Image 1 (cartoon, rainbow, N blue to C red):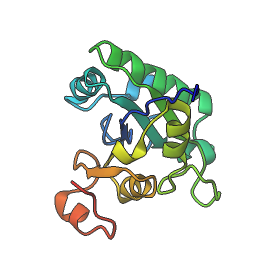
Image 2: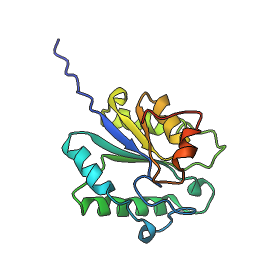
Image 3: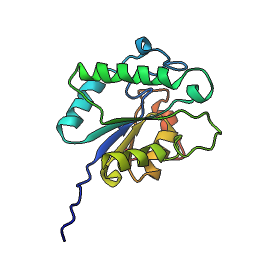
Length: 171
């Protein structure tokens, strides 16, 4: 028919704080405060090698609360990309919700806005993708976007807390 169809690829969509980096008590406001989780660079590199897109989606309400600027968030993310690259890992995208809770945006997890934006911009097949997070709102966002979901205990929640969530992860 003459039209070309782009093949959509699967993605690992990951939360930032508590999944990609060690979860702080409040916010990572400076690049020097950003510390990768052990093993995360290797895991992302394996996803890259397998042909999966790897995307970070992160709520950063410190911006909406006036505690840091978008420029500071971007500087932290440049550091994240540098640290991953030093281990041969790369991200296909980083999506940020800068809004404070209650602002009514469509991007703040548990809304799926950042996942849908990434899928549109990067040609992702969310039905073959997985959302990996350490909070119930991560799992809810993944479900709402049509992804499989994985809850991890690397962040602020223990296994018993995760088992008590109303929205259960697939794994």
